[in-house]
Length: 110
Length: 114
Image 1 (cartoon, chains in turn blue, red):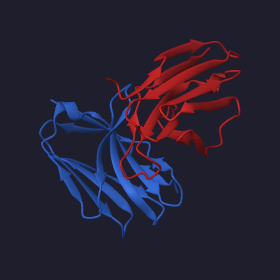
Image 2 (tube, rainbow over the protein chains, first blue to last red):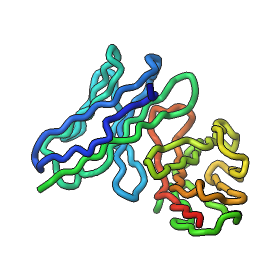
Image 3 (spheres, rainbow over the protein chains, first blue to last red):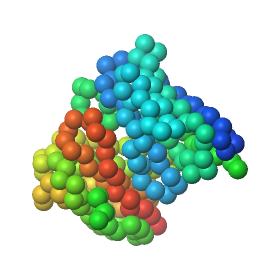
């Protein structure tokens, strides 16, 4: 089992719809969780950290489910500019490394 | 002002050559990283430096040698380039070793070995 697993997609979603995707992680001792966004041929950019209580930033909501070992990202009222690859990132506390998922590709269609 | 800048942006070179990629950050961060993103889009850590000290040295061929002259700079030198080295190399920085704040990435160096 991969340490961090994501559905690669692509998710094809009409503009204005709500879309959600999950990311599972294998190490129950993981402490920090993040969602990054990567546009085509660009660098990854931090979208949001994921807190135990869940957190929201505008149209984006991130949640953590420790019991089932996954994090989720929900995007409401999707915009064309949301088209990107969303990378799930997990910190295993035993070392200083972040473990990166391969990303979920999201395509918002007009 | 670019926070993490790396040069060059594109690098096309022949097999067997030696090349360097430079990275500088003006964020005052203590920790810097080199990542490799291959054609399958996996981001893999190569090296991590904290205050010029090597912290993470993943299983990377010893043809790759990082150098950190000060905490704002982390360069990557690659000897005897091979076709399989073709990838995008990202430099990144973070405030410290604790990964609670996420990373800031440079725009990447697209290396093509022919």
